[in-house]
Length: 192
Image (cartoon, rainbow, N blue to C red; front, side):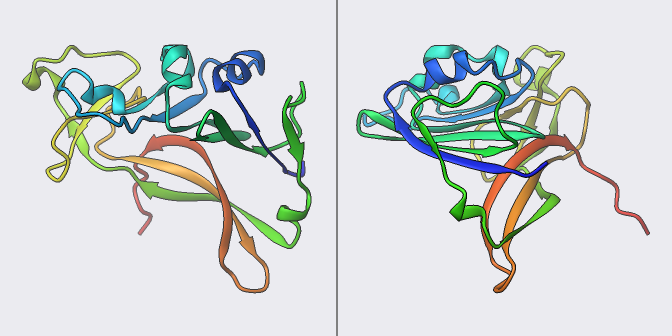
């Protein structure tokens, strides 16, 4: 099936995420860049990587940027004043996207490349060493360069985590023009 691209702006991202019936097991990545000094209690909420059904819907609307994604789709946004600028890239949605306009011209001349993998920061960390409880659907990862534990929606005890991305490459120049996140998965052993 051919992918489509929708773009536009809306005032409330939470309403769109709730009304689009995105699957509860979809991944969500939220970023929040506050204008004030950050307290230690606020630090974990600055970057959240979770399953959609585990995220407080208020956090979605308070995010500076974010994305909801699965293998077949990605909805991403960035706050711009009192509006959220959106991009939806995927197969044709079943229920339409209010406030967004289909944009076929941006995808013309692009070739789709599935399955590109990128490593996320960190290696598996025993959370009990830091006084954290073990969770069934999440794992903690540590990275020396980042002064906090990273919390990824990963059910397996993978040493490293990879993000699978679909890239849209210009046929003439070979440059990546668009991309969409697809899934998280454990590090794949390289074949010899």
